[in-house]
Image (cartoon, rainbow, N blue to C red; front, side):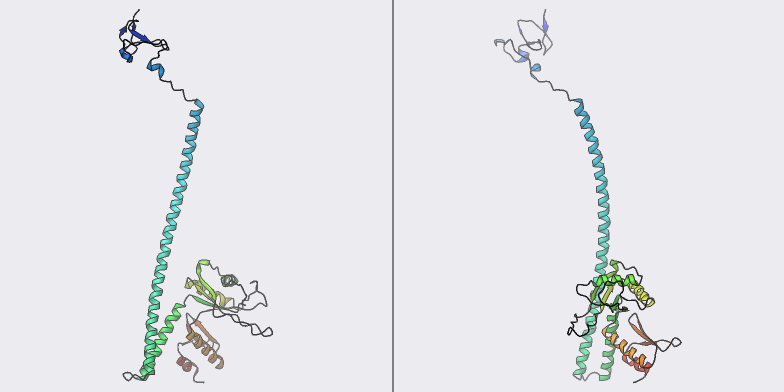
Length: 324
């Protein structure tokens, strides 16, 4: 019986073909690239049988791959959410930093302008004082004195405005290794005022440290603590609380020694301090009951029924109290 070629499908005689020893299929010699003169081995195998069959994929492997894929997909989803939240937080933080930098830039610009104006005023004062010393002929001496006094007054007003957020804390004993910032926090707590760290710009003792003259001598007076706040409203709140709780002391501050009263006042320029000291002396001499400052301005008052008097210069003291 004639067979068909496994390659071309045409009939083939057994004498003209070759037979695969594995699958028993018959092929034309030319169809499998074998010349008619070639000798065929009994173990000859066709190309189809020579190609190894791929082994099937185990079922448990497919299940593991599927499970791993779902877990990996779930983890990727969680990571995507976390990354999104992180990006949102970073964006918010970046916006806050930009706003903060803008505020700092504005503050630096304002301080630069203020310092420039102060330098200009100081230059003018120095120039006019020099002209007065040299007896400049082009200007009357009295006019120069008035101009200098006015410029000094303007300069003092500007300097006082620069201290509008400052306070002076006195009466707190000074100890080695102390933290002025912590002391200010204790004072605010004593006055029942909530003071946030962001409201405090700086806290420090003013001036050089005073040393004890000898072991038998009394300890030196503690230096003033100067406090600069970020907002004027916080300063005013502390001043109001200090007036209400007049007589507050250092009890509970964990400070060695006796408990002492502390005083919280607005910070004054050197000129205003000197003027306030003179005003208080004259008020005591004339039995006036009240002498105080508000926003860097000095006021005196005879009694609760009298009207307050404003003290801006030394000549105002003479006008109010008369010459001594």
